[in-house]
Image 1 (cartoon, rainbow, N blue to C red):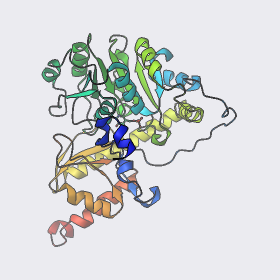
Image 2: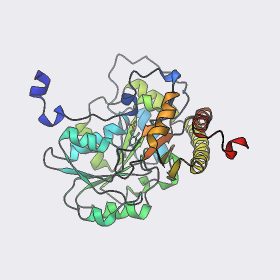
Image 3: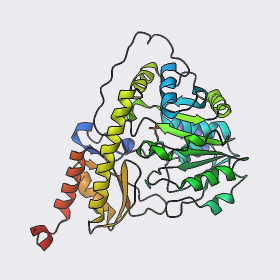
Image 4: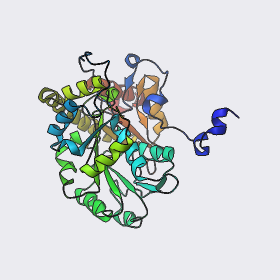
Amino acid sequence: MSIANKLARAELVDMIPYQSARRLQAGNGSFNSKIWLNANEASGPGIYQVNSDCINRYPDFQPDNLLNAYSAYCNLEKSQILATRGADEGIELLIRTFCKAYQDNILICPPTYGMYAISAENHGAGITKVPLIDCQLDLAGLKEHVGKVKVVFLCSPGNPTGNLLAEDQIKSAIEMFADSAIVVVDEAYIEFSPEKSAVAWLDQYPNLVVLRTLSKAFALAGLRCGFTLANNDIITMLSKVIAPYPVPAPIAEIASSVLSEDGLAQMRIRVQETTILRQQLITWLSEQTWCSKVYSSDANFVLFACKDKDEIFNILAEQGILIRDQSKQLQLNSCLRISIGSEREIAILKQTLTNALTDITSPVAEK
Ligand SMILES: *Cc1c(COP(=O)(O)O)cnc(C)c1O
């Protein structure tokens, strides 16, 4: 037995880490040789410059330029914002702050984002599951766990489901847990329907936390920058747990520039273009005989079920087009997810499937 295996917390020995799209494809070709539609990233590079004048100094705990910019964007006080290394760090902080290891539980509503469970496992928090029903909350199911969980993770728009949760149901969940749990609304994709954000409810609900990221609509997944939004007493508590210099100065600088007026305008154009491509892809998928169900989407990806998901996945993979297999998620056993890349990338994906799957003797192909 290795020294690591002998000394580590026993539950980590067989634990499988988060199978990110990047990890699953590690070593499998460079960015340029493949079409990456598996991690809900935006397509196309941004052009940014950083000033290295003060790089010999530690950054501020929460860089002022960044907090000012995000505060203006989300309409909250700086005291209600914590900048983190991606929204993923916010998830981890919430669990470490509110769950006592080997005692407290989080609640998740699968199918949902995988990092809630991974972070809980890493910390030794228990995981209670109340599955979605038709991609919406099961309020009666949630009610049974009031008083038995510390942090409830809701994802709206959901990943990998794609749809927004009904506003009145999110509110009911927050109210139900008002005295006993933090209710986290993960808004990683909220830029695709900004009017549906729960941020405006923070004044009303002291147990509400909203998670945000620059990784999706802002096209900065490589930057690792996210935000936890909540009332000041929660932010103060999380600030005791987070690392002392969580946001590197160059990251704060780039992030601030995408949150400028120009940067926001570009983001909104990207969102519009993505939404058009997404609707076209949904229409196309629903016309394909091999596709048995297309889920509605309020985000930058489309989830669909197929008669033979391995065949579809492999046809694309052989041509260097990477999408995400979601079949291991509860209720999604024949489902795949396509991130909306560029117009060209989506066109290549459609053409590849059409070439491989259209029976050339059929009358449809002769049109
Ligand atoms: C991508 C994603 C995140 C993580 O965002 P990062 O800021 O890149 O850590 C969090 N939640 C959901 C639902 C996501 O899809």
